[in-house]
Length: 409
Image (cartoon, rainbow, N blue to C red):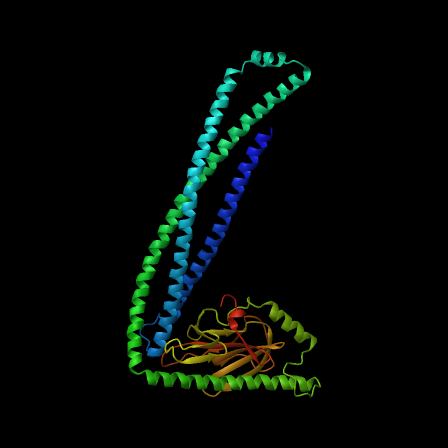
């Protein structure tokens, strides 16, 4: 009786442990596949938004910026695909080992079952069983022999069921193994194509960089001039926010100059709390876009020796693309900034989202706006057809990383 239960326990424990390992690997494989698909979509978006119109005259710096961005995404795609292939290799090895174990276990079960059938056949006659019971020395021994006969019959059934389960598991593992091998080959084939495309892009990048290096001083000067212009625009935006903070405190009767935050009404506090609770889930300010420049201090994507500061993100999008509010709020300001086209600032309690480089604006100061409401149109540079939205998030007057707030940015 104890041996029978021990056998069942070991069988179930082994099955459970192998299932848990398989689940863990499948979960990791699923995460990698989701990331791979995201990167593939991003490359398609880059091609659609940045490389679709090959006839347009881009500056060399813009072209190499776009190319460098695509190269980095493709390298990530190759890396993730390699991780998937390596994980599949481990899963294939695990399943091959499991198949060998299952075949051995199945052979043992069948051999034991065959021996039981032979033993049962030899003593299957009703007369043999009756004689076995009648030869008992007392009633207790006869009762135990009846129990033994019943347990033996039950054990035979369990062994038969165990054979069925092992057979099904073996078949399923074989099917999974074939699929894993096919999936791995598909990944290898896709990676070969991606590697060829990467090599072509790297050659193009190298050629462009050789041209830029000939006039490195000029390019460096242009980058620093653009940084100065961006800093001027950022200072104007920060001044608008600081003035709005001072105005809110004055209106609330707070005269202290030490206050650095908005004086919020109860409704404003609710709005701010809702904004914070949506962190990481806010929609993009454009329907289709790729981030060309990320937040923070970083080397310039072309001239790596020059450091640049970005208080937000620069998003490349479609020509004449509409701009959308990322959350409910009130228009704090519509500003015509020198050298920077139009900007819209939307207040969400003590948070402010800023949309810069607009050609058209559909809202005015004081308007209430809702999530995804169109508030304007992004400016398209007529000389190179680049359509870039600069987007920032502030808490009071301190900048935030938009990638922490916008969904999958």
